[in-house]
Length: 90
Image (cartoon, rainbow, N blue to C red; front, top):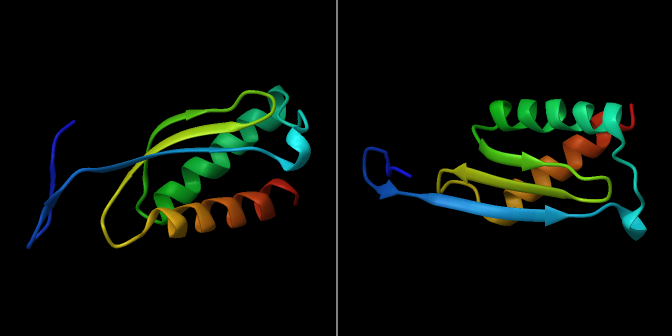
């Protein structure tokens, strides 16, 4: 991985997130899995979050992201989880 540069700093921030649906229900069958991937990729594009890896088995989500220091890991997850849940259940 290469370093990212801004006007006043050099950084390489990567986070590995794993989260599960309530009670670990198996909600991500094939059509829903693809829909969730598209939703998460779009959120990443909109909020300048680089989705490096994204794997969605039936009962959880693994994601590796790269971002700038302007967002904390908790803010990244708040944005991704809230918007993806809203879009997924439309």
